[in-house]
Amino acid sequence: MDEFQLIEKYFNCNEIHRRDVKLGIGDDAAIVKVPQGFELVTTVDTLVEGIHFLKNTPAEYLAQRILTVNLSDIASMGAKPCWMTLAVTLPKVQTKWLNQFSKVFFKLAKQHQIQLIGGNVSRGPLTFTLNAFGLVPKGTALKRSGAKNRDLVCVTGALGDSALALAGLTKKIKLPRSSQAKLRAQYFAPQAQIAAGLILRHYANACIDISDGLIQDLQHLLDASGKGAKLYLSKIPLSRFIRQILDKQQALGYALNGGEDYQLLFTVAAKKIAALEKKLKFYVIGQIDQTKRLKLVDENEEIIQLNKKGYKHF
Amino acid sequence: MDEFQLIEKYFNCNEIHRRDVKLGIGDDAAIVKVPQGFELVTTVDTLVEGIHFLKNTPAEYLAQRILTVNLSDIASMGAKPCWMTLAVTLPKVQTKWLNQFSKVFFKLAKQHQIQLIGGNVSRGPLTFTLNAFGLVPKGTALKRSGAKNRDLVCVTGALGDSALALAGLTKKIKLPRSSQAKLRAQYFAPQAQIAAGLILRHYANACIDISDGLIQDLQHLLDASGKGAKLYLSKIPLSRFIRQILDKQQALGYALNGGEDYQLLFTVAAKKIAALEKKLKFYVIGQIDQTKRLKLVDENEEIIQLNKKGYKHF
Image 1 (tube, helix red, strand yellow):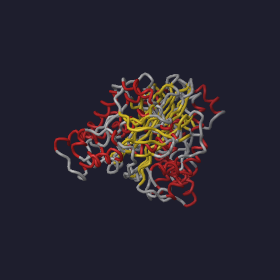
Image 2 (tube, chains in turn orange, cyan):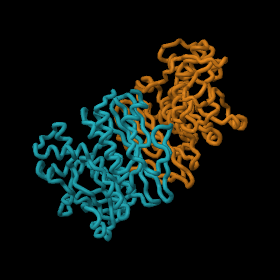
Image 3 (cartoon, rainbow over the protein chains, first blue to last red):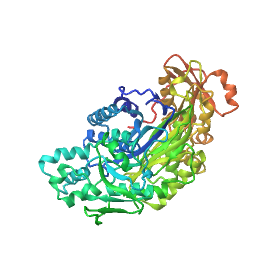
Image 4 (cartoon, rainbow over the protein chains, first blue to last red):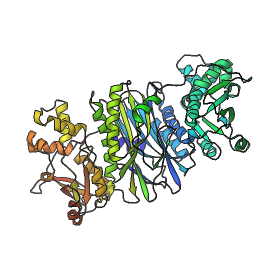
């Protein structure tokens, strides 16, 4: 099977046809229309076997994961995902693997009505690079740089589970059998917070997704906004699983530095909180200030020292 | 140096600022504007060390090559390149290599005023995936599928040099010293025919770039158009180098099947040829017909049999 046949068989899904795609897969390039009054949001992310995922990770999980890491970035801009291109390098052509990957990939794409408009399949070490596109009404995209003094710092869900699951998978920690399946799913098949991003566009001043860990990503948001913040450790949401397995100090370590949670971290004016609570579940975990420093504080407002290292790519 | 510092130092070029880029590198995603009346063209291509380029290929050549393979696809649609995202995986961080790559990459980007709006740098086997974007006035993009009966089949330049250079580099053939430098440049540093594509948009009915070899790419165009063609072997342009080094039959083999020439192959109505000749240098090499078959013919219109295999990715 050559590249053209491979793409035709596994990557040309006939079930997703958007009207804004004038020409999809099959020519030298795709042609798409951005509707008037909208801006285009785009991002690229790569997953490499042995670096970003463990060897022998099932194809279904990889399909979910490469979509989530990119769609999460689109979600954090408050944009609606619309198209994508995918470049895959494979050590060899394995029909079963390709079938499994393609099935889950397009199932998720269909859920969100995202059309694959370009692709590249070639031989090489197992690597996925996805470029995702989203649309957003002109001037309404959320950025990291919009945080305002006194904004509340919020997060859309519990943190640390993904890092805990990875620690279990790599045998750094022994997980009780009862929570293994749930935690693994959290690590392998995370969800991009697309619906939350679309709501937050109307409320939040700044937004980022948590991929590198709460502290590191909050620091990115603060740097971009030229602000500081207090982070209330006692208010950081922890899942039932992580609280059962770890003591509080350990659990916080995973929540603060773990990464790959793919929850949205955002800031919002205090006066909008009540209205936002009617639309979205979220947790207030801190407050923006003018200090340009990030302070971790306990219930008594005392400053805590913790290892601040998030995930580093090199 | 972590990923963020790497991107800031080597991939965030401050010299290219397009007005249609509202937010470039540095947030979760970029925000761009497609001007009213225009459509967006996009394509992705990957180069993997040991598969698409030889080990120890100098960084400057890789920068040129990853740009060309993608911009050539944008050119073949008759679009003007505007933005791109680049995902690079590197076995290790080498300052000298990164400096060389980045210098040539942005020099070429600047020539065409193409802004890098997203990137990913991570550890892994040496691989480049570039997603290129182009703009084209609504409804004017060139496609593979537009060839009409009796159109003349044309090509923008000499074919086969790139494949000949590769044969020299891999010691399959011994190249005379006098032509080595020129041929290597042809292989390593090909040019995308961007200016030609912009002209052809006003004349051609169908277009494709020659990446997989003349026969294979012409076949793609014919399949997409539901047509056949006669290809006049005696009219295929061959460079001075290839004619000096090989006999005519061998030279034709490289020109027909070699690939990676990155010339544009297009079809145009006979009545437009004279006007097009005033704007662009090109060669008429065949004619579209209704047969649905591609025939290679000699000066006496007799059909020739040749090995039809172009480059296959697997």
